[in-house]
Length: 96
Image (cartoon, rainbow, N blue to C red; front, side):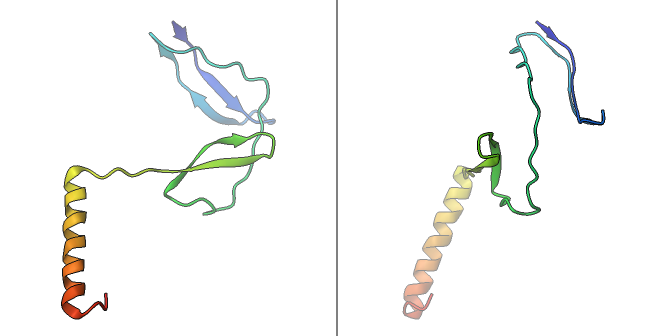
């Protein structure tokens, strides 16, 4: 299958986004019947989150937390740090 470019533009013809051409085993593009937008205040979404989609009924973003999975090495380092903190805490009498 071959799919051409898709250009999204505003009411004045200004280009908002361009999606490139695709060829091969691709999923056909969805037909767009309406475009809308919302403005989100600056820094109102944490860096450890992303906007999954927009709730079109309430016109609000659906926000999901980015799950960070540690590598085995990072997990081992975290375990060692925890062990050191526990040992130091016991050493000083529970002040940490």
